[in-house]
Structure formats: C-alpha cells, structure tokens
Image (tube, rainbow, N blue to C red; front, top):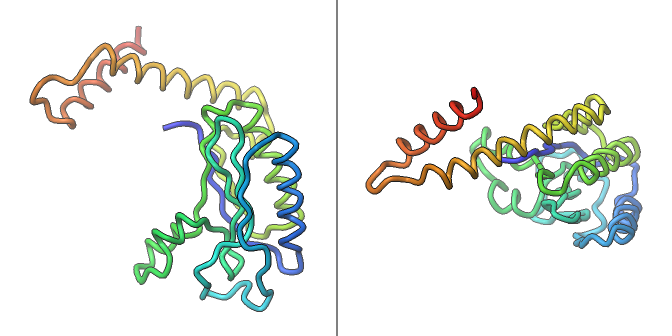
Length: 196
C-alpha cells in the first residue's frame, strides 16, 4: 500500500546507454542519492530480440525516503531489474514472463516533490533514450501534469494509511481470530469511521 509509479519500456536503438547512465548519475549526485551502476554496454544486435543474457545493464538510484528507481535493461533492451530477472527470468510460463518487464517505485513516503522529480526525469529520459515507454502513475501526475491532483491523491493515501494504522492500534486481533475474519472486521471499522 502506498502511492506508486509503474513503468515499462525498451532502450531506443541508436541511443547511448553510457550517456543515459552518466546523466542519471549526475542527477543522483546533485541530490546526494545513492546509486548503483550495472553493466554499461550492450550490443545493438541483441536489441529487440526475445532472448536475453542473465545480466542487467543501466543504473539504479534511491531518492530520499523512496524505494529504488531502476533504469535497468536486459541485453535485449527491455526494461527489467535484477530482482525481476532472479524471480521471473527464463520462465516457460508465458503469463509469468510478463512480470519480468514490469517495474515500479513507491513514492508515498518520499513526498510530492520527489514524485514530481521522478516523473519529470522519466519524461526527459523517455524522449531521449526509451521507446515503448509506458507509465501508470497512481498520482496521475504523468498523465495530467496537475500538481493539485497529485496533492489530493497524496492526501488520500496518507489518510488511508493513517486510518489503517489507527484501526490496527484501536482494534487489535482477538485471540484465535482468523486473519481473514480480523481483516474483514478491521475494514468494516475503517469504513464506519470514514462515514462519520
């Protein structure tokens, strides 16, 4: 639970991976964010192919109070991460294989300014380095550019988290109560509280 940006895409043929990594590294250093350099070169012949090596290319960085943003790619140029590669790589099951290429970053605790900065960075990088880049922004800032909508969405998520925390403290699990029964009771209490 928490406001999240979901994204996927591919590296653009003819663009420079090392240049992208250098630009992102510079931004991370300006903001004093930790970053991790993955492999920095892949061959253009592998781009767009179905098969891929067991390597990640690109860069990851971690803004303050935020999950890590991975700008990583497989050798075929599709976005992925080391964790996704470990869990979903080389799977025979086709529905599960799609998760290999789905990335996300939770920005809930980082705040509005970090969320906006990540979205603006994605817009810049996607124009210069990515193709087939898709974003689903739970804050709707990617789609609208409307800071008011983003602020309202952040406020709603904060309220939900506060209500959930309050409910856990106020309505503890009873002895021998099944988790399914407890969560149903907890959600019922939260909804009653919101109607007041």
